[in-house]
Every structure is written in structure tokens, then in C-alpha cells.
Amino acid sequence: MKVIIVGSTHAGTNAALQILRDHPDTDVTIYERHTNVSFLSCGISLFLDGQVKHLEDMFYSSPKQLEEAGAKVKTRRNVIKIDSEAKTVDVVDMDSGDLTTDTYDKLIMATGSTVTVPPIFGIDEEKVMLCKNYEQAVAIDAAAKDNKRIAIIGAGYIGTELAESYARTGHDVQLFQSRDIILNHYVDKGLSDHIVGLLEDKGVAVNLNRRVTAFTGNDNGELVIETTNGEFTADLAVVCTGFVPNTELLRGQVDMDRHGAIIINDYVQTSNPDIFACGDASVVNFNPTGKPAYTPLATNAVRQGMLAGINVFGNIQQYMGTQATSAMKIFGHTLASTGLTIDHALSAGMDADMVTFEGTWRPAYMPSTDDLTINLVYNRQNRRILGAQFFSKHEVAQSANAISIAIQNRNTIDDLAFVDMLFNPNFDDPFNYLNLVAQQAVEKETKRGNNHPRLTAGVDPDPELTD
Image 1 (cartoon, rainbow, N blue to C red):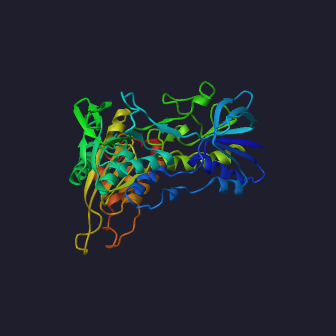
Image 2: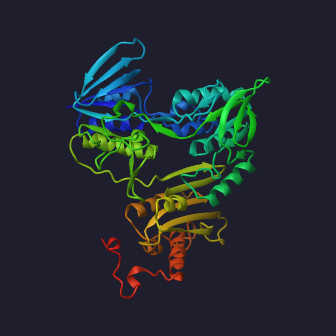
Image 3: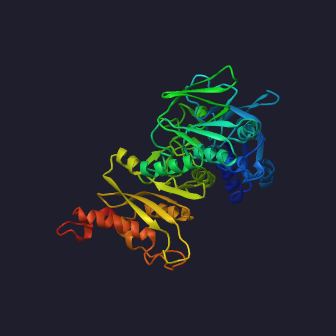
């Protein structure tokens, strides 16, 4: 069988390796526009502030390694057309300009995403840069060495991480966000306000409710940033306003959502049975809502890529979906989240509520401990856990993984309140903090008269809770 993989960052690399592990005689060809593969863009901020010394360490594979595994790797090749009826791809050699046509039995679309370029006047100014791939990271690093004042446009994960990195390296940092909340895909307003305060304490000027409308220059050679609420100046701006899928090649040939992300089934297969899609080019099956969503995360890409490599040989292993679990370090604190925030749950039409645990991660009588905040979001109707957020100086990221499993398994607050967890004063209290926050939720519902369904007289339990 002949398989063509278009793109080779996370999803494409893992798809190729999986195919060649299971079926080493498969004819696998990878077309990649860059000279490199498998770049971990989530490590850019670590490189910029010196925690990682070499940006090249952010590659976990290479064209040579893929070739040694048995793939044909064609770098600096731009696929300009895919004909899903004829099963052909037209490819341009970006160095020679030569055009060739290749054929496939199965196609894996792993073209990833690009930074959303908002319709801002002057976005192509020399002092305005984007941040996602290796080449952009190199350019940003070089530019920052000669520019003291840096503006970050967009306060998602990447923008917030860059703001921290540049604050650590002595730069004057301004962070611009069009909303009144940062990290809005991951945390609720109260926790956002706490993180904003932490950023400001470390010298980052956080500008909320200021949508950038234009970039211009002035007579002093400064970059002028025009917003909906005033003008600001900087030496350099980095735009981090989200991502859009690179899927134009299949437009009109497979089903897509409103973002242009390719819709997949439980086997990461598109509406064309010979085409598979994975990573930032496709949707995910988002378990908290049970609906497709566009969630461009490396964790999703590596899993979907491996599944594409398995399922090109038949419907072998189903995609479990995702909770979009993620974490970041910010000025010595761990922020971790999984599933839905309360705002997103309510926006999805759910009868959702949230409780907040504020305490410590282990007993106060121990030589040391740290404050811990947990937001737990749940569905009041069936009591299922929908999401959680964690914030502490202590490493609590693995607790987000635990809640991710609970969401995956459709566990309720009642389950989490009593699930078996270890106790040792070195690590936690007799009831782990996950038990405690769930017990808060149970108590809150009991006070409302919304008792555990199995205790409600004359009412059968929700059948979905007993399946």
C-alpha cells in the first residue's frame, strides 16, 4: 500500500512512525514544506528565556530518522493540489520550481495550522512578528536582543508564556488582550484575575479590553500600537492571536467545520474513506460536550497521528477523544486545566455550576506547604464532571490528568468525592484535595435539595449514570 503524508510536525511524524513500526513494507512518502520536522513550538518560550539552551533540542525527530525508519521524506516540497477522485497530489520543489504529480492509496492530511493573522492595519510591518514555527522562533530571538520594549498581542497560552519569558530576560513587556480575561479557553475570570495580578507583580503591563486595530510607526522609529482604548509604543510586537487550520487543499473535497477544520469519525477518517486527518488540520472529539471542536494542541496531534497510522489499514482502534488537558508554568506557579470552564459550559447550554477549593495541598503541620486553588465544573442534571482548573506553587499538573480521566469515564461528583486516593502527610490530607473539592460540590447540591439521584425517593437513577 502507498501512503502519502502531507505535513510532518507532530501528527505527520507520529503517523509515519506508527505505520512503519506496524507495517515496515508500506510505501510511505512525506511531503514537508520546511527543512525540519517534529518541532515542539511549546518550547519556544523556554528557549527565549534561556531555560533551554538550544532551539534545536525542540525537535524530537528528523528527516534522517524518518528515512532510517523507512519513509521517503521530501522536504522543501509544497503540495499545491490534491485530487481526491484521481488520488493524486501535485507537488512543487520549492528550490528548483519543478512540478511533479504523485499518487496514493491512502492520504494522511497533517498540514497543521498557522497563526491567525487578524485584519489589523500594518500587520506586515517589519517590527511585527508571528510565533509558531522554528524559523519564526529564530527570528523573534534575534530581534529581541536589540529591542527592549516588546508588545505581545493575544493572551492565550503562547502569549502569556512569551510575556513571562521576556519579563524574565529584563524586557519591558506589554500584553494586549481584547477581552477582560486572559487564558479564556482554560480558566475562569476569577483565576484569570489572579494570574493577571501575578504578571503585573513581575512587571508585565497587562492591557485588558484593548483590541489592537493598527500598527504604525512614528518619527522616533518606534512601533505605534493603536487599540480601541488608546495608543501605545514598543520596539517590537509579537502576534499570538490563535491558529487556523491549513486545509485549503481539501476544501470542497471533504467535510469541514466553520473553522475550516476537517471533520473526522471515530477512526480519524474524513468523509472520504481514503483520506485521514489529524492534528491541527482536524477537529477533535471533545468529550465534555460530546461534540466536535477545534482544539489545536500537540497532545491531540500526536495521538491522532498515531491513530491515523493504525487505521489506514482498517478500522482498528477508535479515537477516545480529548478533554484538552494542558498545563503551564508561570513565575514559579503551576496552572493546569482540563475540560470546560464554567463560562464555556454555560455557553454550551448546560445546566452547569462550579465550586472552588481554596486550601493547601498537604497539612499545615508539615514543614512546608503551598496554597492551592481548584475550580471544579460539573453538570447539575447528571452530576458529571465537566472540567477543572488548578493553580499552585506546588506541582499539581498531574491532578488535571486525573480529572481528565474522570471526564473521559463520565464520572460524577459523587464518584470523585470518594474515589480511592492515597494518604500520607508528605503528599496530602486523609481526603485528597480532589476528594475535597468534589465533596464541596456534593454538599452544594444537597443544600439545594438536589440529592444524589440514587437517594431521591421514587425517582429512578439517570440511566446514563449506571451504564
